[in-house]
Length: 291
Length: 291
Image 1 (tube, rainbow over the protein chains, first blue to last red):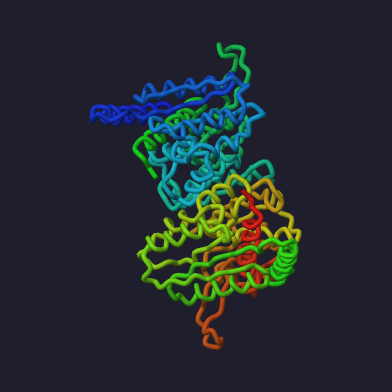
Image 2 (image 1 turned 90 degrees about the vertical axis):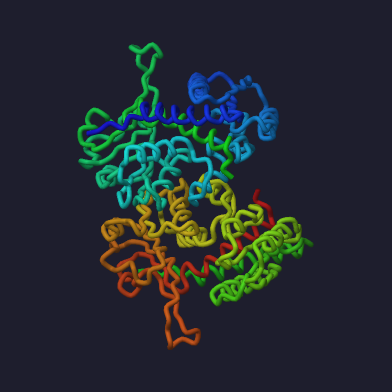
């Protein structure tokens, strides 16, 4: 059993990005600039955005955090987005989700110019990913592909089973894994809440991507010996022994599953750190221009 | 074994559309207007376009066929597309593929205003389909969903195996079948040329969608008794006994597979007629406005 170390890989990638950015700056060019919009004071959102800002510093990016009270109207938010769309000094920006209930998240997502949509949530980027065209790829799936690539994990002809059909993880990772590419070229099965024989299907998998958000869902009896298991789960479970009051729990029963695997990602320290890393890569791409 | 009669269903849908259009016209409204661009003189393309024009007549649509010699430059074609994008009397238009080699098909596809992209090939419509938002759905997958719906075929929790990962059939039908919808809510497996144990995977399927373009690929030993088989194959096989000199061959060995199935689509007369029907539905939607 070998651990896929997302934390170390992410640090490596950020160092590579920082090196490229320092060359850009030495050449007299402006560094990439990422703007994050944060509405309200959700604890999770606060810490996600703080981590993104921190990653920008490590990469040598300029970052701006725009905070709005949760009383901001949809119209006001859309007008801010319009301003960022037109600002030539902003390469990419993200609107941290979730948004307050009176704001239509889909409308906001689609208001972002797809050329600055570094989260990869705009339908045009979702479509480009599915077709196999260059574009901003949703951060978590892109991070998983990067891990498979950097660890040289053979995927061609393998059977990948994706647990979960969310728009930001399950569907796009399924798309990427079925593309004729390396990593990719897998037979892909997508399972979800309506799947009947999920245990039997998982047992057939050479690669499992667990993205259900159900702590410990993947148990040892569901994993074929020698499989690669990618755990996307990051459920916050209350834990009085931690300073934060919680710990992150993956979708995989790591202690019992890990011994069976050829490769496995831990939680924390697996896919999580790669997600922010993909956002940094997208921002660098936005600065360089990909469309 | 019961036959899914695409020809009869398509006729029924076109009659429904014609009725709606005649009400529109009686109310003093302009009927839907579909424009087809045909470049060159490919035999297949000629007949596909002729069928689309004919379907427009049946539905009471206005149709225009714009023919260009295969010497047209990419720039000229793009300028024609721009003109159609801006013409308020054109609700939807299609550029019949394939195009001559000196023209970039992807560039042409993306030049079409997504609000007039009734083929559903623009990345923004591909993305909207994947996310589950309203938009123009690629015609063949939309036709398959319509057949499953009209025949009341239960899909929730069923295991659907899609053979083929093309951008216009395999990937979008996989997306539609996995959505939380009826028809939909299937566990979905996508197989393709790199899949290793395709026979074993097919044998697990409750629903098989065969879209490989390999005549007779799906044989009786690959089908579980009671399965539903949707045959998207339409390969032209030379046949001297036919006036046209060819016959259409599906991906399924119909004679031997049909007796095992609960439901099966024939070729011709199954999915084929539904594809044009979906184009008509998209054009009607374009006229009424869906964005």
